[in-house]
Amino acid sequence: MPTVARKVSAYFVVKNAAQAIEFYKKAFGAEEIFRMTDPADGRIGHAELRFGETVMMLADEYPDFGALSPDTIGGSPVTFHIDTGSTDAAVEQALAAGAMLLRAATDQSFGERVAQVLDPFGHRWMLSQTIEQVTPEEMQRRWNDGASA
Image (cartoon, rainbow, N blue to C red; front, side):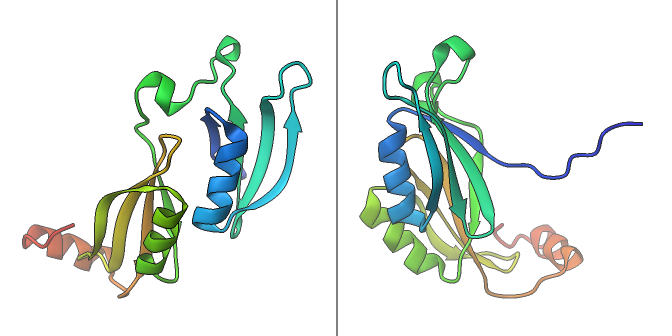
């Protein structure tokens, strides 16, 4: 019988993990749970941050283990989604902490106000706020009718 996953968590690899932790605290209100520092060279070998109900893990690059950051490999195909109380306030906070705006906040046909930022460590974040409850069928109808997604 196959094993069923109980939980999925993001594990970020970044250059300058200590700076990244401070950025995530300022930009997204993350709370540092703990960190382990490599006694050989001071890199962060493992840290855990709480984003609301979600725990994310983070480490500095360890190329010998295949742990490379988006900066080293030329970007990341992954975008992280944050459910916020206010997209506009979340964007302001992220930009003040050093993020770069990729996509301004706009209301979407699927019932969310969405913006996208890039953090200084190469990770993209979609900041979202529910503005309307929309069924999957209505989302598809709106998309079929040409509403922006």
